[in-house]
Image (cartoon, rainbow, N blue to C red):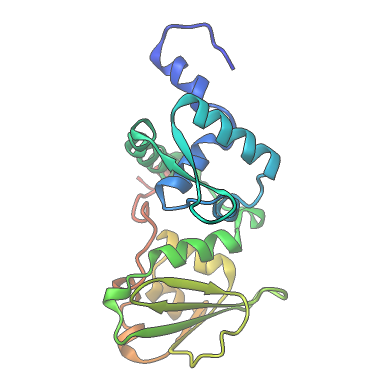
Length: 227
């Protein structure tokens, strides 16, 4: 879209103003590299639109596409131009927490996005031993009610099928509560005390979950109505 203005804000919006563009940059900043990883973080985007947005961002110089060595497909990386959008994304996120979130509709409680963010939030160096297995049971869901995080020193894997490993910690919780806890809208203590969350496991893991499972980047930013 061309705005026909010399204003730098208008020129920036010609590159970034299309739907999904900034969210694609968000995912790349958070470590996504492959097409399917971007789709996982943007569950409602169609493959056609994602392909078009990636092409547009590459043409503008925001990202670069590289062939994967010895494999089919490509990986996507932010250029310096794209990396410099980090403070922009952060400011938009802070503004959104303060002014735009409001109450969350059930349709906005994206289970796959939550598990992706939880996977990214684990701090393996704050967990004892070589491997920790965490099971989430979402009490209000029928399908996909059970998820596992398998954490090692090298990486954290999300499983939708039982990995066949001994579980170290159980989260029994409804989806809305887990989203609200991770986003910082309510505390773990409040969720447990109110009966909305049950943690079952050793005290070393349950006593202070946030030491090994980091909260959302924007947790702690109060909405404007509470200021």
